[in-house]
Image (cartoon, rainbow, N blue to C red; front, side, top):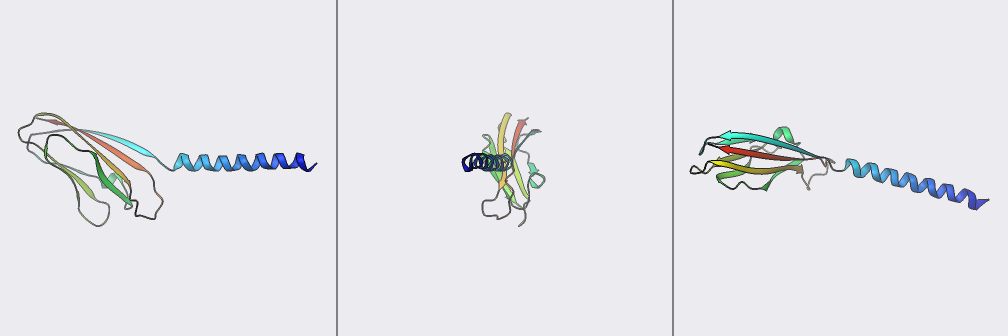
Length: 126
């Protein structure tokens, strides 16, 4: 009789364990993708505030650097999450350029927030 009661208990425990693991992994990482098309004149500044894409426990990084630039960098304006991406194309270049930025959880932060945003900016330089 104990054998018949043990099997359902084992299956029920295994089912609950697998369900809880599946839910956690589904919510552990959410990646949003944003594409921005920008047209600028050669040698002029382009700035994008990244604050709307993240929280105080996020960091911004450049995943893929632009190719034809005199300035392509992230600038932090304060202690809270308020970075700005600053781009100035090479003054001698016209055509297309692209940069890919990432907003993701700061590994030093203790708060639980694993969502990320990938921002691709396609530049048309005139």
